[in-house]
Length: 105
Image (tube, rainbow, N blue to C red):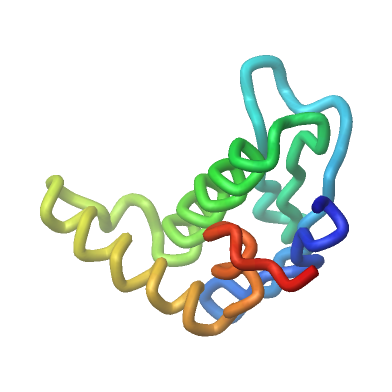
């Protein structure tokens, strides 16, 4: 199933590479490196944790792109996140399919 992990994702006009890796920081399932435009995911995790980790890092990448300091209270955050996630999933249907478990074999 990891063969179906998307190789890249577009977030706010930036294309991040997605790779599996050993050596993710202790307690983390995935990491995003903004300056390298890279999302690394622990490939030893169960598939559902890999999917959730990817989505988690996409939220981080979205907020970095949009500028975290502009995110105010809870309602502003939810509004910002919903628009950003909608754009990511719309621009990258393969990523949405992977996160939702709808990959083509």
